[in-house]
Amino acid sequence: MLFSSLTFLFVFLPVVLLVNFFINPKFRNIWLLLSSLFFYIWGEQEYSYVILLSIVFNYFVALAMDWKKISTHRKKILWLGIAGNLLLLGFYKYFNFILANINKASEVFDVSFQNDPVHLPIGISFFTFQAISYIADVYTKKSKAVRNPLDLGLYITLFPQLIAGPIVQFNDIKEALKSRIITLKAYVYGIDRFLIGLAKKVIIANGVSVFVDDIFSLTGGDLTAPLAWLGVIAYSIQIYFDFSGYSDMAIGIGRMLGFKFVENFNFPYISKNIGEFWRRWNISLGSWFREYVYIPLGGSRVKDYQVYFNLGVVFLLTGIWHGASWNFVIWGIFNGAAVMIERLFLGELLKKHWVGFSHVYALLVILFNWVFFRADSLRHALSYIKAMILNWDFVGFMNYIDFRFILIMIFGIFFSTPVAKNFFTYLESKKNYISVTALVLRRAFLLLTLIYSVMLLVSQTHNPFIYFRF
Image (cartoon, rainbow, N blue to C red; front, top):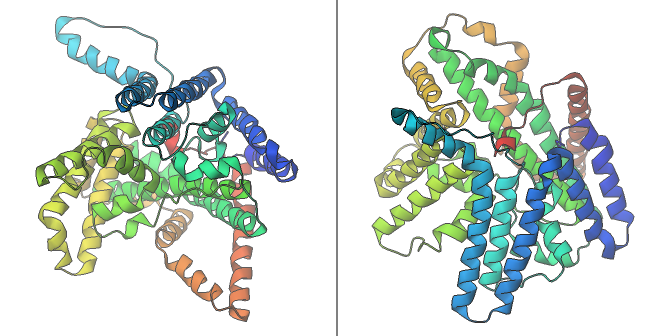
């Protein structure tokens, strides 16, 4: 059930919010757990047992660590818990990829292994990482193991961030699981944030998705350099507004339910280098890897060669986390290499030159990175990049552009920067008729985007969600 579906907008979400608002607070966790399970089962049906298995397994792993007082015993249980979670993720997400590569390597021996494709459960990458953060926090004693399995079940299945994040660490919401107060201010903020996310997803991300699909389906001489560049720029708009839009909706729903989720995006395309980009893009994933991989490996408090090794491991795992494909492996390595080179010398070199040069450098690296992320295969990615560099021909270019596409791209580029946000924040801080006018205009604008988004959802059948495959 997509957040940007009519069923979710006009049936599921209103019912959940109304009942949650009026129900006795001591029953809210049970209501949200049942609602979240229904939400998940709606999409997964017979594969819903996977998330239930994760809840049960991690519940007993955490309890076992609490029962054991000897450090070595607790560490063994932690490693058992991590291994169990990774095996679950590895089987459902990577089995098909591993088998395909084994078959490819075995062709020289004329050997092939056959197996029915393994289904990828929705959101498994997100809820598995949340489960690992829970048992890790119990091990380090940042949190105590929950005694009520319903509370852990709610943490892992909480529907706003279940299928696309942000990745919420248990330590961040453990108090809200016990008790939370829903204020009018938080509720209004949640509505505003949800409407912003909905507009991002439906109006902008969906608006360029057909164009992106058309361009990336071109082959041979049909894919010219101008089209290839425009296609990857449009894809950069699509993936940002698709993913950040979902994060905004998740944060908004969470606030209306009494939870405060971490921010996940901070205008990443204004970055001056790739290191900064990763501090602004999918912030919750970066925080997770820093907390549970980079720092345990030694972080930056080790010798230089170890720091680079730690960075390499983090970015390789980041690529693998995103998908079972060599494209994602290359994408992760490409990002890691860029960060390492910046740390070695490029970062200081960029600071000595005009700041616009740094922005251009960062955007170029990001765009080439997105080719690997979007292309269907490594061969497709390389041929696409080749077309970006070599095939400079404007024949047929204008056939792919119309007024609506140009308008969406302008809005996409503009709202990828903090200009509008900073402008309205400044006006609303005046505490006079200007702030009231700005507030009214912003709410009117959000209402118009809601109406237009619903109109688009009614009339359109193309409503893709990029992060479903992760």
